[in-house]
Length: 562
Image 1 (cartoon, rainbow, N blue to C red):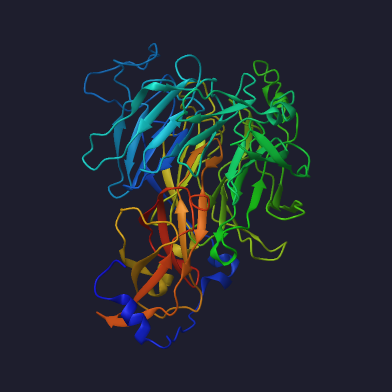
Image 2 (cartoon, rainbow, N blue to C red; image 1 turned 180 degrees about the horizontal axis):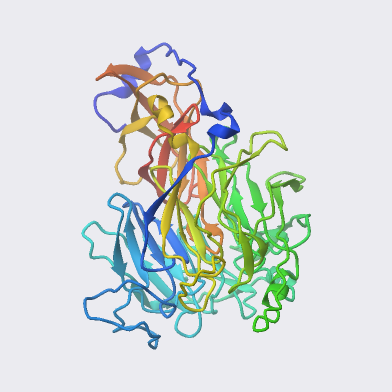
């Protein structure tokens, strides 16, 4: 057991601990849940089409290298022209590293075309980034390994290439630390792996052909690693469970009701609800919200030059399905309004935030109208009809090519939005390029909760915590400890096109009792947590650990499983 002293001996000596129930924010009224917005950067230099939070508390953002830029890599003056790819001499930056602590950006050098690509974090925290557009992007694999000295940058793989062009594909990290890459345009009804084993090629997936309609509507398929090690794949409105090791569909799920489609370009979003130790992390429930009626993309695209477009109202329905049930069925409910191009983020509390997007239209250049500025809070444990709360609105429309990511301090970073082939700064709020970055602070960050907000003072360093093992965490609370204390770990996703790939939260088991001491006027606690049992429950890598006391989360600390 790690940590100062001998905490387990202290645990043995304690017969019981009085856990005083404090005022909890779970029951706060709607007016107290609004949260607030803060502008972080007036000009990040790029429109953040792709984003991911790294374990060194930096956020990697990038666009496409021939799309536009307002930030340079080097000092010589430049003109914003489209050079040939790969870009060896271009002095414009198309990727940045955002430092959360200093609120500053560092320009990075990305060479090949990352337009509408995908990615996942490997076990050691390296971003593995796949695909993109055209010969200068679709077959490429790129790596970004975080560093502490400000010298790290993108590396293009010389040896690893995609066998199929991966434009609008999805990535999922696997228990063996490989990445499965699924789908894409140009009839890529197949999948492949990074890295590949000797002689390994493409694997056919007829399901993608079956879900391919006249608008496609099955791009960026939703992938979730289920508790049996197989992959849940949702495309258009249908879903399967894929045994990728044997290239076999082992389960077909009911068609999602509600009409319309949920994947690009009728872009909704998907999330796996938090997994829980109480059932061995076995129960898996998927939630999918938003999207557009079939035909929305075609109508939005029609007669662009003559301004004859029609923007159909987006879908307002959500569906939840327990995919591990013997008889899975979709439980449908309505959101507060229609929404397309929406991101879904798991908050440290386990609640879901639905953010960004539009009321009408679809994904695509200038194919959406009427931004939805209010985030919506979703509480899965509430009864149907009482799960949604409308929150404080942003002043910045975030539509096509926008992103949202959970930060370790509990804020949501919102960035991007660009519905043009290049960067355009007109007064058209529906299509101008958005270089501003802002942050949404949910209700739980209100200072009124500071007395019951935990502060993690010790957790095992970045050395990997073995699966199923116990590890020690110390924390303080200024006020009283609630009877409802939870310990959550969160895998940060790669976010693009309203799809947070590999987003995952687990609620961990804690030994009882928690030992309480008084130190410096604060209540000081030791707790022994149990790591997830296997990389099926939690693929190897870095996770944000958060302690939630009566609905109030601590700032996260990074830990490493594997």
